[in-house]
Amino acid sequence: MKKHPAIATVEFQDIAVGLHTTDAMLKRAPIDLIKSGTISRGRFLTLIAGTTASVDESYHTGLTLGGDNVVDSVLLVDVHSVVHDAVFGKRTPCLPLATAIMETYTVSSNIRAAEMALKGTDVSLVEIRLGDSLLSGKGLSIYQGQLHEIESAIEIASNYLTARKIEFTNKIIASPHEGLVEQINFTTTFNKAKFLELEGEGNYLPGFEALSGRY
Image: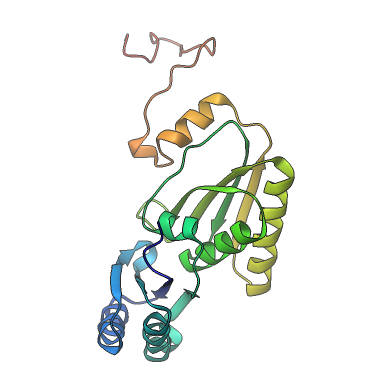
């Protein structure tokens, strides 16, 4: 269940500015500081949540004080419940359905694009990843649904990102391989992924036994 009616993010180019501005945002209005800290490319990301009025006030304080140091930001005053939960780390099962991947240069733009896609189409959101150390500061979201809905969702998101002049890459997989579905279900982070020994795929490399541990 959605706990907060509004969420916002502010991405700063410099860590010192990010810490200083986040302090001012917290002092400006009674909000929840969900997360803040360094992300890749030496940036600083702050994620806040709370009532619409409080988040709006703190968010605009961040933009004003951060000034030109703000790389990107987003304010969602009536955040979609699925986006809300995904931002808090919830993942939904990956199924053998048409799948879309949206990769954006900034975290904030990905969150906004995801909300627009979900409010405008009948798709599910598998996950949103927010600039973690293996993403080089990027945002990543994965969607599933019927192919025509997936195509519409990506069109909505792409149009928004293009208008904002945000760098992005997207791909649609009409019918994902069962191995990929299983891997996405487990994780999309390489160093946490598990080895999948797929039936009939051939597990041998020259000079080695099967990669399942027999070497």
